[in-house]
Image 1 (spheres, rainbow, N blue to C red):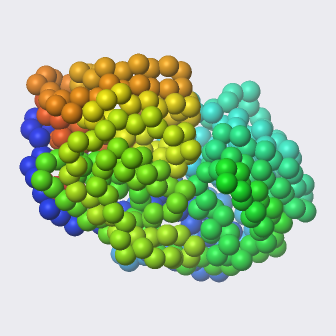
Image 2: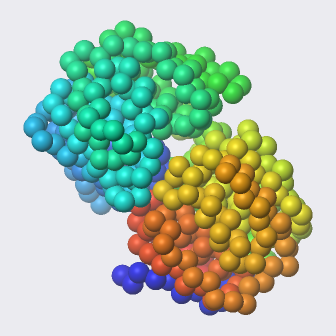
Length: 438
C-alpha cells in the first residue's frame, strides 16, 4: 500500500447510504471484559483495527483463548485472575484506551509486567492513571509519565476513593476495572464522560451503583469473584461517522444515510455542536441495545453555516471529533471560539495545535492559546495551492480531517502516512470510494 494520498479535486455531489465499522471504545472494552470471564463471549462487527488487534494480542498473552471467524470474534477468558508468567511484555501499540485500561486489570498481577507502545503512545501521559492505581497497591517501576512502564500488582488490592477531574473516560474506566479485582467497595467521583464501561457493567450484572448527577458521575463498585460472558453486536462508531457527516454538510447538493451507529448521549457532542451551527442532521430509527442508544444518522448538505461560541459542556462528548468540527467552523460565517481544550493535546498528536496549523495552511486565520482556539470562518473558502501534511505522529484523525478538507475545499493535497487509519478505521478510504472516487 502506498504511503501517501494525493487529492487534486473536490468531491462530486452524492446521495448514498453507508455502514461504518464497529465502535472502537466498545470493541476494546469488550475484549478486556471478555478476558475476565471463563465462559465463551462472542462479538459481531468488532472493529478490526490495529488498536483492537493489539488488545486481542494482549489478552492472549495473559491466558485468554481467541478465535476469529468470518462472522464473529470469540474469547474464552481466564476469569478474574490472569495466568501469570515471568517477563511478560504487553504492547498497546497506538491505543491510549488499551494502554490505560489494561493497567487497571493488572493490579492483582503479582509478577512484574512491562507495558510498551508505539512512538506516539509512549509520549502520552500515563501518570493520570498510575496515580490512582497506586492507591490500590499497584507498584510502578518507572520515573517517566509515559511508556514503557513496568508494573507489579498484589494478591489482595484494597478498594479506594478516586476523584477524577479531567472528564477522562479512560481514567475512570481504568479505576472501574481495577475495582473489580479489589476487596471492598471502590467509590468514584468523576467529571462526566462517556459511559460505555458503566453500561457494560450494568449489562453484566456487576455489583455497581451509579448515582450520577448533571455534571458528575458518582459510582460505587464492589469486587467480584467472577464475570458473566459478554455477547455483543457492536454498533458503528460515531467518531468514524463524523468525517462522513462533515463531508456531506460541506458538499453541495448531497445527502447521506449512515446506518446503525452508536448514538450514546455521552458521545454525540458533535451532533449538538453542528446543529447549533445550522447543520441539517437527523437521528432516525433510534432504539436501545444493551443500554446503548443506536440509530441511523441522516445528513444533508447545509448552506449558511454559522459560527459558534462552543459551550464547554460538549467538550467531553465531542473530544475525538473537534478536528473535524474545526473544519466546519472554517467554512462558517463569523468567528468560532472553542475553549478549555488542552485535553486535545493529550491525544495521539497535539490535536489543538494541528487543527490550527492545518487551517492556517488552508488560508484560514486562527488564534491559538494553550487551551483554546478562535477560527475566523470563510464560507467562500477555496484553495488553489499545494498543501503538504506530514510529520503528524501518524495521528489517524489528522489524516482523515485532511482528506475531508481536501475533498470539500479544493487545492492540491499531499497527505502522508495513509496507513495511519488502520489504528481506528481501516476501511475509511474504501468507504469513501463507495461515495466517490478518491
